Image (cartoon, rainbow, N blue to C red):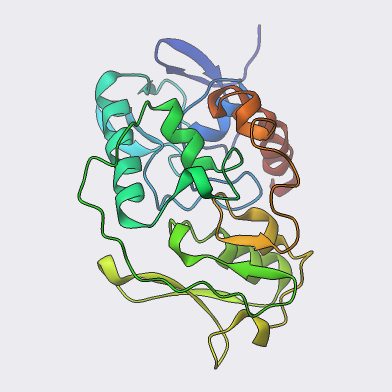
Length: 246
């Protein structure tokens, strides 16, 4: 018998540690809640809302909702998965995502989540925004067309790299990723190919030059198994983080 507090998730009892969110506790217990902008090495952001669950009768983002003993959480319902599917469809419609020709195909979390939620079409009229590619840097290139505004590169550059290479500008539908240089070009920043900001992008915005298709399509991360089967691999890092932060 343990004194560790628990809550229920779709009827299953989930133990949690002090300070963990619902999503962190679920992943630590090897229970998958679909999510996109959450990264175990960064403070939960709650921007994409894909991890929306219903806790004690109210909708909330699982990545930011603190776990509470006795809480009744619902995640795997048709209604919540329908909401997540619409959110993913909106992301596909808002950007320019050409998966068959994308270097990130098979490694892209948005694409993998789309497969997992059985998204077969964007479901909305495509915006087709004009977003020029920045190929000015000798080792990196930026394809803004794929940005989902998760801000992971912004936070990684600020909090880990200490450089503030990236930022967001505009509001509403006009919100977009920018490079913090007078020229607006990546070549005029101090970003390095080894920076955390380069590693953390969940889609295909920040890519290394001369590295494309090094791993053949069909052998990439999400080609091997669906995102729902891999999410718990990051859970030990989340658990360590919560203990280290305590």
